[in-house]
Image 1 (cartoon, rainbow, N blue to C red):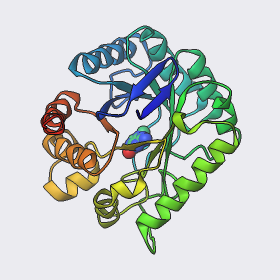
Image 2: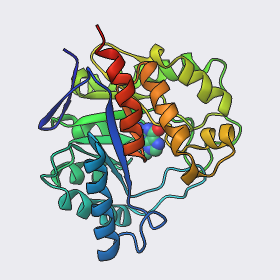
Image 3: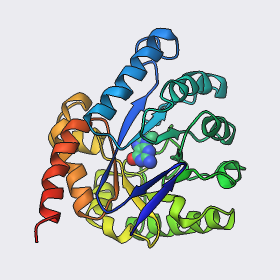
Image 4: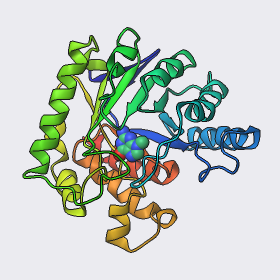
Amino acid sequence: MAFLLCGRFRLSLTHPLIMGVVNVTPDSFSDGGNYLGLEQALAHARSLIAEGADILDIGGESTRPGASAVTMDEERRRVLPVLEGLAGCGVPLSVDTQRPGLMREAVAAGASMVNDVSGFRSPGAFESVADTDVAICIMHMLGEPRTMQQAPRYQDVVKEVGDYLDARMAAAEQAGIARERIVIDPGFGFGKTLEHNLGLLRELRHFRRAGTALLAGLSRKSMLGAITGRGPSERVHASAAAALIAVQNGAHIVRVHDVAATRDALAVWNALQSQP
Ligand code: 9MG
């Protein structure tokens, strides 16, 4: 049976998993990082678990197009107290970071997964988690968040993203990270036009690899704004539809802001799977 090793958790991949997003950035919670911001982040995280999140992804640095970097100290100050505050919450905690130093600290603080949108390209990134049992999510991004949406170009987006993920997976295995700990992700919206994103979603099954989990993050992204003409907070229905299509096309894990809506959409999908 297919599963993902994720720290002390062993997640079955026979049903789609919902990863709930907890952004600990000043635009997400007032006074992000201080006591009030921390309490709000913890309350939000707990509400996502109550709604049905199977994993929480906690990030302290925005990866939106055009976003600028925060210092390591600031990122640490935002993320570590949330991980510590959620210890024993019952679901695996993922840390969304590109910094090897913070990866190590986050795992020590209780993270069971590391989600790196830069595909663990920073020197020492794979090594910082290799001798642990945490899962890693390797995502494809063309360029870096500040500039990635400036005219991204591919000859064949599906082939190039697939080749990149295969190469990064091989590098992870070379560093001693077993396949059962690896999640791969084509990185919707990270250096991709609407046409690229639609091509990836249509061909998502192409990214399934034996022994690894496939994650798709489409929630509230600008591609859904381009399709519906709606702002980020009004993209709940489009996000649930996108998550459903991703699962239908082979995703094991969907990364979402709106857990309750996604849970209901996937309940319909799950009901069909259990039909004789
Ligand atoms: C942090 N983050 C924002 N969008 C994401 C996506 O699509 N995938 C992953 N793995 N992380 C994301």
